[in-house]
Image (tube, rainbow, N blue to C red; front, side, top):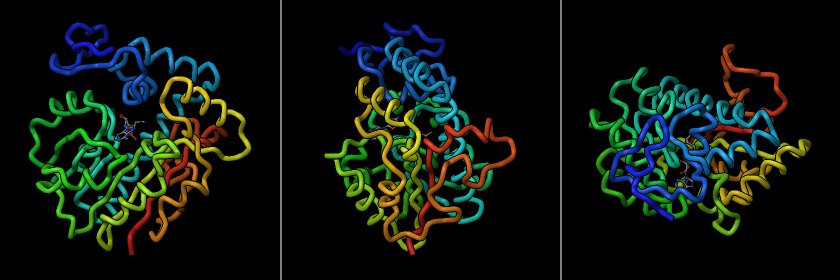
Length: 280
Ligand SMILES: C[S@@+](CC[C@H](N)C(=O)[O-])C[C@H]1O[C@@H](n2cnc3c(N)ncnc32)[C@H](O)[C@@H]1O
């Protein structure tokens, strides 16, 4: 069932009145928002989250680690790699340290296209970004990567002949095996010019932690993906042909982490991996 958002303003922060929201199925965007301590979620999302937290109390820590990795990746890409253009696919609802905010601290001229399949992201994103000409948000689907590059807003903000970065934060894990995540990553890499970057992070099965398949089963139960915890080697294939930036594709909390990272020694961190590859 879908309903106009204005009838559902049950949360502290109501979405724009023209947004239409499915209230019967958990939405990945809202589930992640809840885990991060945000305000844009409904009962159906909280039920899914609480099932995950009951099974694995560290679930919110994994969400925080994912978000923190994205922030550090953007800092690296702007600060060290000199990247000025980003396409953030599966960008999610606005949260602490949005990509353009992190990037603009290092270079005010950075351009960002946010892409998400969930229209609620567009609804909230419009309000957040209305003051910036360098940043936009569009509704499009990772499962059709070539179509993303045909969008007028991508043409307007991204010069694909110049190095740019594709960000895949916590989104590849929501592709089904039959949707060919390895092939999707290959099609994205094909769009990059020499010197362009692909960043990917998400839930991972380290192979020795039964909590990974357990959480995977809960994601599946709530229709948020059936293979949300691929192994590390499976995900390394997303970077084929790219040079992995040091320290490689690793537990995300160990990727250039600062001293302020929460609970850094928690073994659950092995269930969240991240890395960045550069096209030679
Ligand atoms: C876990 S959130 C990650 C948000 C942000 N990238 C981060 O890492 O902090 C995943 C987002 O991917 C979006 N998503 C899932 N499948 C997608 C698809 N096939 N195409 C585009 N977006 C998708 C969801 O709507 C959700 O907003």
